[in-house]
Image 1 (cartoon, rainbow, N blue to C red):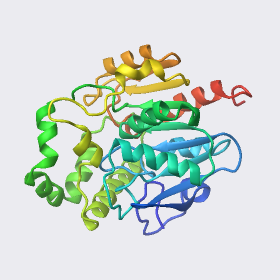
Image 2 (image 1 turned 60 degrees about the vertical axis):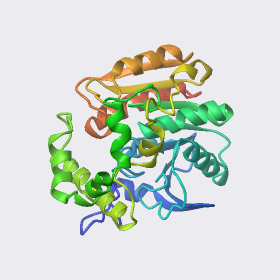
Image 3 (image 1 turned 90 degrees about the horizontal axis):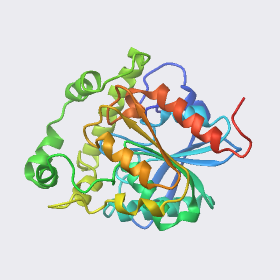
Length: 310
């Protein structure tokens, strides 16, 4: 059994994530996609995690627990993350868009709200452009896929392609990953030590799974969408085409995707708006989870035909 962060529990009572969600799989040509689902009534919401050491039970856990009370919530492990192994093929932008649409077909979801962090936001935008009738609204946190070049672009392009990167994948230790979780994330004051412990353990579990399956610490999206001179996926020039209501949530201290890009993205979208979370970094839903829950809940209630939840 796993806890709400996708890590194996040794003991203790089930978390609310365990109680409210059940596991499933969708078979596809390249492999199968694992997902967790909860809630019997209400609009459909699909939660899409970020790249690298993330999966469907980590980033959006708090949001999932909140929305499941009045939504049907689905949290997939995107290919080569979590339990979505083995996967025989690339998990790049085009493939992930197709995976999401196939999953929606399997679940008989004609349309859904997409909530994505970083990689998950890039995939959400791609599906909104590719099949706009399938996306009712979006929440894009630390949105990926909205810049022409990333920080230290040439290095970011070369790093996942060198033998050193595979050595780095093998050389990580549980202690270094735990140290990253504890020291590098700008946690809000209301994040407890127990929550930080679970997040650190989740990083270790995800890294261990990647090593066990021969995976790379960098995701396929990073490896294939960062081109030698510029990004192969850049939705920014096309955002005027995305007409669905969209909330962008961005950390004030995000150094991976500067907040100015999120501001420009919101301005380009006909129904886009931006909420900046003070003190938060790129992993905003992990380091400021309660503020993100509040923002997502407010947005979803405003968009609901029944009005805000009492």
